[in-house]
Length: 124
Image (cartoon, rainbow, N blue to C red):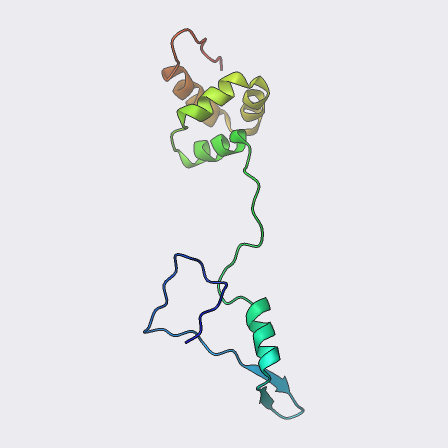
């Protein structure tokens, strides 16, 4: 059985579930007629993926967006990202204006609890 190139590297071929055959049908006035042209079948296999394939690399979101999503999900913020926010007052201000007050208070409490020695506390 031929494997398609659009499969991910981690996916394994399941012998109990073979790949479906690609069929091309031409519609006439009364019914559908299968076409067995190898060029058309190859083109269809190449251009129409049957599994999800990411089209392009996504840009990495800004750290402030990552922190915002973690706050809304109730997850802890990574210390490296907290350090970035401490060094970037613009991102800190953006986060304060874009999250709900209760999430902002949680963030400030978490940042101040993990405060390195000598660093000043963040004010609400």
